[in-house]
Image (cartoon, rainbow, N blue to C red; front, top):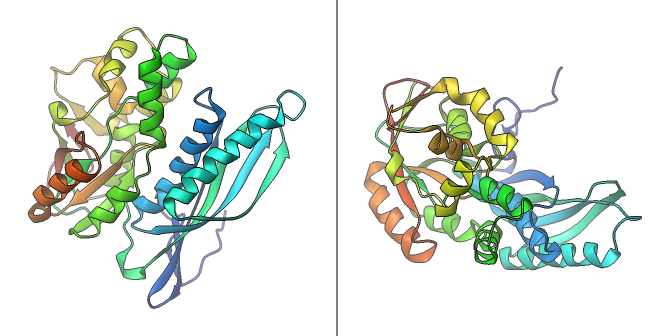
Length: 316
């Protein structure tokens, strides 16, 4: 299949990345992304917030600033009251306002399954685009949010999560990556991605695939929602985690001390997860300190870029 392109396309479909980037002028490029999905929480207002935060995250991961958005809606008009749709849209609007984004339109269809999300356009300088490439040996990896939301959401659907856990994880997923993205602009960042459907290791695999570097990950440094261990041990692991593991486990070398529950968490599909930031060694300490102070005390330095094993991930 021949995909249309031209000389102004900076990031396209040639290799998996978080968003597309198109150069408009010498100092301006557009960053474009789209994402929508079915409800992962019962409250329609919070679902709207989470879906919006998730879509906006791709722009932040590329180093851009989101500017405009369009709603994408699939709604079962004959099965659900329109007040539900109104609350979803209100949640999305609230998150867009927080991000400084203007809603410029959208599209809706009648469907048997409810879905909501955004198409987002952002701005960036053409020479400051961050992708999943450009990793440099000696760089450090910093993760800004804990893992485990996919497993927790499975427990929520099964009615096994307490109200406190539901509230905590809902707020975590609805939190924008805006502040983390703003902070990292002050540091020597070589690459970035947001952790979503492919899980931590799935997104890491995209970063080192076909590269001449590898990643060394320190298992005990990875921030993980505490309840995720309990629910994973009960078998509440989403099917997406198993698919992620089947697809990418061949690129990962695990220490013998790590059990299958821990491995499942590292492949757990996240919704509106944190940023995985690849920063030069000299900027890592300062970046982590500011992220802990301004974003989350769970932000953590979890590994580094190494010369060997090339194109692989070593977790120990």
